Image (cartoon, rainbow, N blue to C red):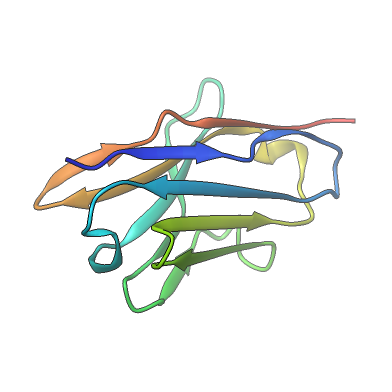
Length: 115
């Protein structure tokens, strides 16, 4: 069983920054790929960024150059540093992993970009 708890969301002005954190329970964290997804109102959930156990990363086109995913295996935590935020980044952000073909999701954290 894996539990994921996100934090760090909030209200920020356009051009601002936020850092999201996702703390994972369990002993398998350092062996699994971790993802950040987001879901805006009326839209499908979409992948924002992923990081493998070895630290390789992929990003959605919308996140490239502005967002950075990282992980601290000693703290069982994955981060999403978001810079140059835009109103279209407004969404609920979810942490995700899958273990043995079972999906695990956090409860989500709201990010609102507005002046």
